[in-house]
Image (cartoon, rainbow over the protein chains, first blue to last red):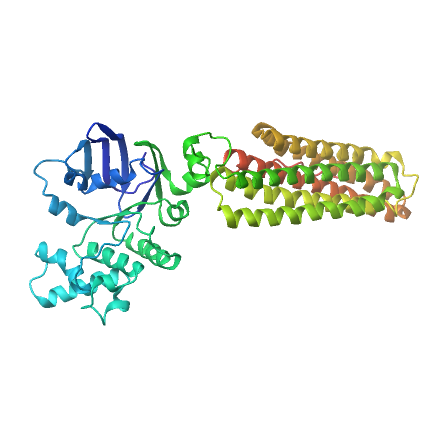
Length: 257
Length: 231
């Protein structure tokens, strides 16, 4: 299903996921291009969040969850036993639906990851990481004079950008976003979308969204999931102007169910 | 998943109303074109005012459709086939409105024409009018049936419209050469011919919009054009 000459960053092959006896994903084959935004759409429970949680092995933390099949990043299998998930999650950051800053200062929220990964040798280096990460997340100007205030004191939109900055602080290559704007007002949403546009120059982004308009605005490629299967993947323009699959069309035009 | 109608009923009703208004507009335009052609051929000066007046109804419907489309765009942010229906309906309604205007212009030219219009002058013009009316009827039928093949056929047939236009103009030019006193009448008839030909162009636009609506792609390549006749 490769669309152009872009390099494939993530390759899912025959991916099946089970929660106990219930199968959540069925034979997912999906290529995610480097330095592009891929949007995943589909009704609630269709498996799109389960899918992105396979990319940084977040499903490992769920005891009853079993993952079969392959996910490769840059051609290397991430489900091998010898893969260190901490290193994997350093490479593949994640931003969730609800902003979830740590109950720490703005500064410490950003510094937390680099400390764990031993990324800074001294205070100067850490200051530099914090500033760079906040700048990349377009938050620096708003918080530079209050870095010691709690992260939770920020507005919802700012908190979400703080979480993005936190993900960026460990120099990831991939950023997974699970409905990152669903709790935000249109202005905060616009700021995140502007940020996504900017971040895609340096990072591979996979975003799960329930907003069709958002998928159209931010992504270059869109995948439609339904009942744990991937129904159609194509350029975002094709999916929203002239999808090949009737089920996709019914979903995006509001003829579903 | 029904796959038939929108989950939101009012959305479904809005799209249906848009369709109904476009069909009504098409039907009025068809009548106007037929009446205008009949008025020319019969030099029926009495019918002109009615044709001119009826054009207002077509314009009104276009305004209604424009408003409906703005509402659908802002309320529904239509996607995929709905987006294509919305865009195509807007374009088709504008083409129909222009065809209506051209029919009105044709009718207005009847008033200064002599009642005893020589047959040799209107042979090709009559055929041209018949062909363009057939094209319009076919385009509206194709819209109702969402027929891609018919849309292509109409699009290609515009070549015949061009050929007949050249023929009709040539006939008028030949007549004019016989006697320069015919200048005024000839000028009016040339305008009539040209207006009908332009109506034909708008019909091919409709065929193109319809093709896009159905296929989600644009008709590719240059439309076949009739060759000008050397006089």
